[in-house]
Length: 148
Image (cartoon, rainbow, N blue to C red; front, side, top):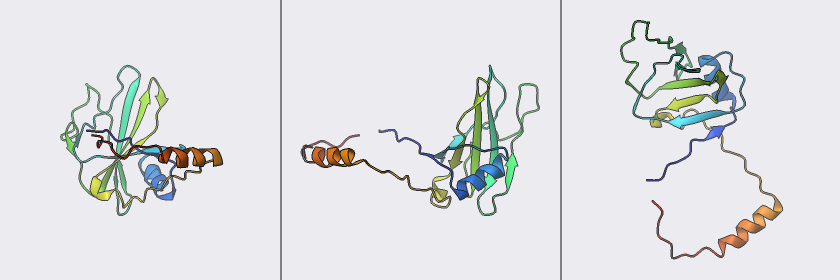
């Protein structure tokens, strides 16, 4: 099975609104959009210089609710260890690694992927790149086996 890469996108207006609803201090240049249909562990606490922060964002009205930090000394919140993704609710994750903020992730249920209006990446090829792609297309064998 091939692993697909998660798209890092420059936040357009919709993605920026989602990020500001979840984390008002967001001023980043890119966001990772990740489709997720299974269960997630939403317990975030400091562990050797790393921490995960989570927030729920309801899609229709972009109302957000942050998830409190869970340390070993806090009373556990039921359902955070095995939260099942549901349509209409996004999970926004922002991680610290060794004290530095990483690229935030928006976990989206697959049924809602089109509703957050992902911008298409703008790819502009140079003249040389276009020639290389055009010429290499003619040298690709048509007798290939499908990749798995």
